[in-house]
Image (tube, rainbow over all chains, first blue to last red; front, side):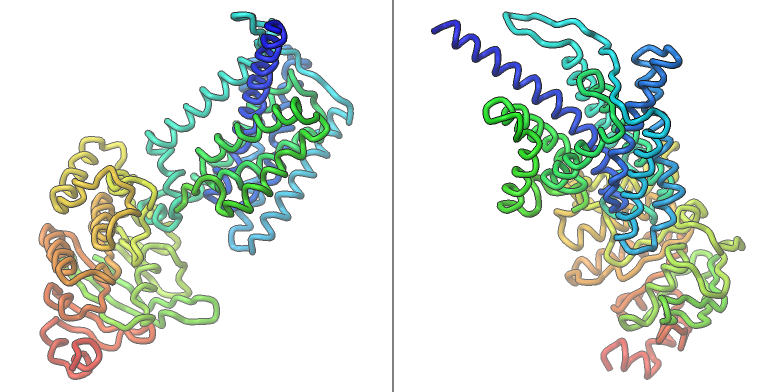
Length: 295
Length: 235
């Protein structure tokens, strides 16, 4: 009897950790998406491709150039940030006066373009990045893969860093101000182009970091970003479009729902849970769980 | 200090400003009178770089402002406090005011001093400094907007309808503040529908109709003009 109860506790802890891990990955991706949406009102579907490109960039840096994990992480963040800024300058900045639908079409085109690019360079096969910490940690009878602890720790550190940046620095304040009132921001002398580029760079870097941290657990494939970006959209709709706190909370909610859903219901339903929750929550609270930072 | 020379501004096919010229000398308090849609806000949008000119020239202290971005205009010493206030509603009062000093952010002591001055000017803001600006009353939000504009250390300040929708007592307080800012040497352009109060503090006034200047002169002359009395002073 007691052994069975103990087994249930261990399994429960396992699901909490799994939910936390995947929730952190979702939250990092959703944060970038919500920042870009909050400031520029662009639903950036290409954000999923920045995730994919980040993972492959790290894979190449480790496999072909022999970089260590941290260097590859930084390199991947730089590559995705660079691509994000380029897509802002070359595509979205030129569409600023166009109807919103054009942004959406351009974002989908970019997604397909980047995916095809990845496939052209690396092929359609699956790859894996070796975990930085392959060890299994044991504590008080519970076990946890070290890589999952790393993901959770790094994600929370990044989120705290992002919060401090937005809340305490002049540069961060330019992003928050632009999200709340673009005209007001221009009139105090904030350069709108700089804010756009900076926001895209941050979103790309966050997506890449999420992808590289998660890559040792998942697999790399050219379409790996598609399900993640779809769920990130669910998350920012749940959390309130443009809300930073909402993206973090929403990411964790979806992460836990998937992890527990897969365990207690069925793995087959795992990917449906996010969309089921979306339907349920929006029918009760059409504005999402949180308000957005802009009003 | 600020001159507009034959300025035209279009919103699509609609010509909002039609070869409009005006000037504000250094230290002046110039009032723009006009009905809704006469073009007062368009003049400000043109000057602050929010909207591109179709034709004409705007110069600030001898410098041509053509093609200068809104941020560039602020750095050149002209701050536009817009109609509708355009605050950052979820940010605290203090952060809103502080962000007004964005172009002077490296001068930390100066920013702190400016913030203290604004809080001394409007003590009610000091009480509410940690509340979100969006939670304040209209009059208090207007104080935040004016405070934020002053933090940009303007040589020229554009104020668009600061009395709109405010209680008479608050309007009075607002006009006193504007007059005080002007006395300290800031050139002010004030767009107003409240002609009585505005003419009371003006050094010169323009009447705007249909995107043109139809009349201008010292406040006393305008007060005695029949057209102005009928249209703006209630007979």
